[in-house]
Length: 186
Figure: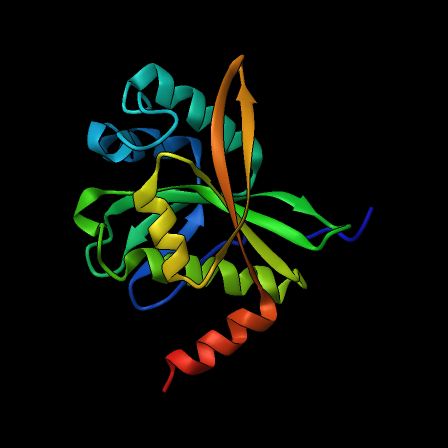
């Protein structure tokens, strides 16, 4: 069903961030960021700051073979993680998510910078539409993807290990992204 696409290139980099494949040895450094309860307060998995909960998340991230460690340029510090998932060749979509950043990078250009790297990479792979799934109560993340130019397309309920959570899907297609990028460069 379609051609193989590498959703975990060795490095995506710009002037603010570097995304590199997540490795088992990154657990402690990434958990040092994720252990902040305020990162997760609006998230459906509000207790992900707890080590045992984060260990499950990390295991799933490693198994995805599409998760990244986010490194701040200049500081060379771990500042978060993100990943590609739900690659759909039939509909030419991929989802970007499971993103979190240390609080010191909230409200800065970092989120837009890392998502721009990932969106551009997805479109270079021939994807027509990039999706974002955000918890319905996570207004901070919803506003962040709207700032990227993504538009709300639907609401849905997701079940994970017997727990149902309400989510919102946002989408941005390549044509709108390219138009926005041209407008941003002026």
